[in-house]
Amino acid sequence: MIEHHRQLVIKMMRDWNYDGLKLDGQHMNGVPPCFNAAHHHARPEESVEDLAKFFQMIYDTARSIKPDALIEWCPCGTAFNFYNLPNLNMSVASDPHNSWQVRTKGKSLKALHGDTTAYFGDHVELSDGRLDFASTLGIGGVVGTQFTWPVGSARRANYDLTPEKEEIWQKWISLYKAKMLSQGEYRGDLYDIGFDRPETHAIRKAGTMYYAFYAPEFHGKVELRGLDRRTYAVRDYENGRDLGTVRGPTGGVEVQFGKHLLLEVNPQ
Image (cartoon, rainbow, N blue to C red; front, side, top):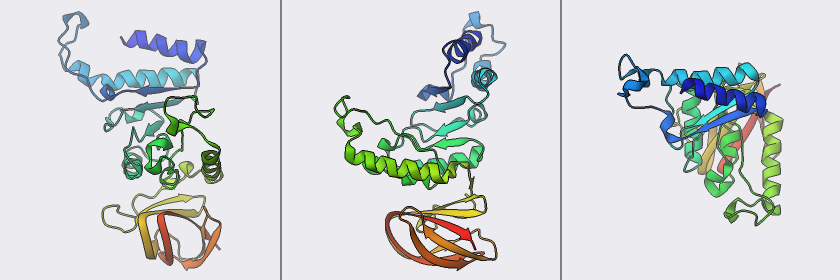
C-alpha cells in the first residue's frame, strides 16, 4: 500500500504538476490492529505503530519533487494525532463550528507544532456570521474562503460572493497580506484564554507586538503584555485609529469594542 501511494504522489506532483496536497478525512488519526496474514505483520499492532510513517512518506515524497509544496491534512472535525504533525506544513481548524473553535484550535496547535508550521483557520464561511476573518488573522492564522462565483452558480447561496461580500473579503484579505501575522511568533504564554478577560492573543513580529481581543462586548482597560521597557505607540490597525502610547513591560489602554479589537503596538 505504501508503494502504491508513493507512486500516486509522484504522479500528482511530477506528472500532473500539483503545487500541494490536502489530505482530508476523519480516519487519518488511527487505524486498527491488522490481523490479515497476507500483510505479513510481525505483530497486529504494527499497523497502528507505522501509521505516522505512511504520512511521512507522503510528505517526504511530495517535498522531494517540489521543496516548497504545501502539505495540509484535515482530520474533519476531530483532534489531530500529534504523531502525524511533523508530516505536514499546514494544520487546520478542521471544520470548526464557530469562531471560538477557530481561535482555541489555533492556540492548541501552535503550542504543539510551533510557528514554523502554518495554521489555516479553515474557510471563513465556517466562522461566526460566515465572515469572521478577524478570528483567524488576529491569532496569526492563514485566512481562506470557499466562495462561489458568479452569484447563483452553486447550490449553497450563502457561499455566493456577492458585491457586498466582495468588499468585506477585499478588506480582510488586504489586511492579512499587509501584516502577514502568520509569519510572526505566536506568544501563547502571555494570556490564558480560560481566565484572562477579554480573550486575548498576542504575536510578535519584527519588534512589533500585535494583540487581538475578542468578546461580545467589552468596555474597560486591556493589558498589553510582553513589551520591552520602553514607550510604544498603540494603533487599531483595522480601523486606522491611534490610541495613544503605553510604557512596557506591561501597558494598559482603555478600549471599547464589540466582537473584536486588533491592535498594533510599535516601539517609539
